[in-house]
Length: 321
Image (cartoon, rainbow, N blue to C red; front, side):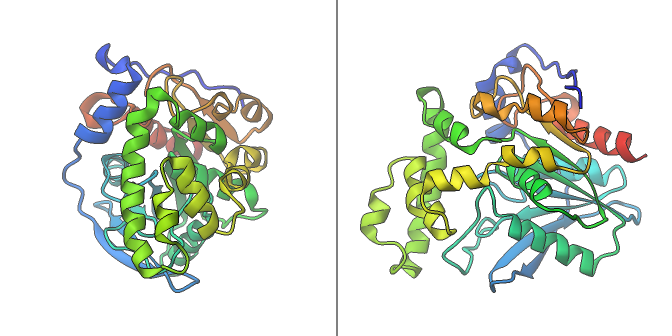
């Protein structure tokens, strides 16, 4: 598909990628989203918690929302989307990946960018329990990569899955990993690492045979974390093998439903490979929008409705209504 020309024009102050990213991650608040938590049991006996919110009127339309690294179903970029879709006739389910709902998951493994088996389990559960005729997927960052990989690696999708919208997508995981290890991203890097290691310390107490204290102490960077834990816990040789096999970039040519990618050009988390111009031009189902501004999940817009949230609703309505 031709590249979409973006209409996103933030205020002068929010044109700065760092400012928009930090504001959105630390300051933004979303009110009046009533969520009901439901737990589902996965194929391996582990669990995932789903936070549901509903349209005021009965509907057969659902949006499934996936968060980013160390996110959860209550992050403003999740509840903001849920609220907007609820107000426009959609039910919404905010997924909490394994271990992200405030309670450590049961297994040594947790979640990662390519864990599409968990997304498939969620979709299968919802289809078996609910009567939705239209299901849409929306993902942010890590969750966005997961959605695109899920869509591209499967020959057949459930008929109910109609379209997808993704934002701030690290399409090439190795490139994004290298970007996060640069000096300009040191604050983000250290913040992510702190939370990941603190949670891993709790897990290590239950899985001492899988992870020694020496291994834990060796984790000094996010690359170390992926090399020591993410890769080994999820069946990959090492961090590089994990990045290679789970990057959604290689799956984009095979996506068969209308799918929008919104990646800001001033997103410091993304490498040049994360702007898949060639793939979008060669796949009629793939739409790529590259705003000049927006940082990483920092598409601040009017009335606390973010540009990527507004575009997601527009894309769904333009495509199917």
